[in-house]
Length: 434
Image 1: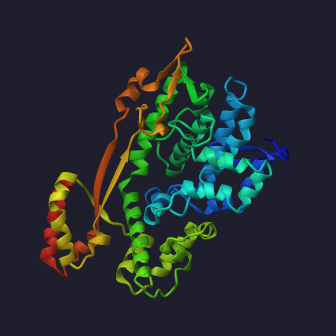
Image 2: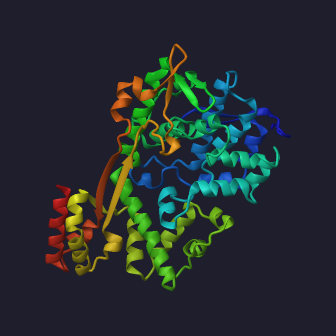
């Protein structure tokens, strides 16, 4: 498995604000970091539109991917001398950790929803396709790229390896919680990772944790819960995401309708037509997207121009809390009133929902990605975390969901036209907001 790659003659380090140092000792990892596909991640933010809410959130997928690699390196060092660990899996783990997000597009999840793409699909395409990443991996062996892709695709035959990078407590989550907390400046997201790594033990199917370290695992679960509701689902960030997605929808609609753009959106052509190639995809980053948004501020189409103005200048939609049962009753009237006020509801009236399941225990027949976290008891038996932790039991299996209705408040406050209609809209929205 080690192939032609040896240890570097001198260890390379990246100075990191979260882990202090990221250590690279393998020639394979050093060469992967230098590939064009991995370097592209410097131009893709980790948290999409979150920077409009938390101005420090400018960190990238590059930062995060190096962090996940470093946690995986520490995990492997912790468990490599213990039972159930195959030393031949070391480079597979490190490579999968480093490359797990290499397929992310600009503004990540918002982008995926509009164009029905999947970053994990593109990650596997990059690993297996005609790329620098693939050529470096193949220097280990012809089969090595497929092994790495299988780990990321959760089809690898060693389930322990998969669990280290994709489970309810893994290298990916442990990095992004700490990193996102650091860059957003919030007090949530912090937990004792060193303690968690010290009590980690490998089994045939997954890593488990000594009972003596249960409180560190509890802290991790609660940190994740708080980060989702205080940072990832922040309503201002979601407003920016709504506008971002509407810009992309509008541009796609105009392109399909034969609209003549002043600046032809050539980077989007294959996306709009649904025939995007890997080479086209790799040319997309956030600098490219922001270039077009700036150019579209000069377009003749009033909707595209307005939405781009809003995004670039941070003039976001306002929101009210939305009760789905009430919303269903007033929704038809709201749609009609928006049309009568000459405000296109397709772009200016949006319901956005967020939900999170902070921890779950496995239920037969459901998604096996939610394998439970197990504690290794002093007697050697395993116990599912929520059976021993009152804190985790309180939130286990409980999905929290909220709904918000986004709209352009400035349009409604402009009473130079359709004054009575806009007043009626505001009255209806007030009933939603309680």
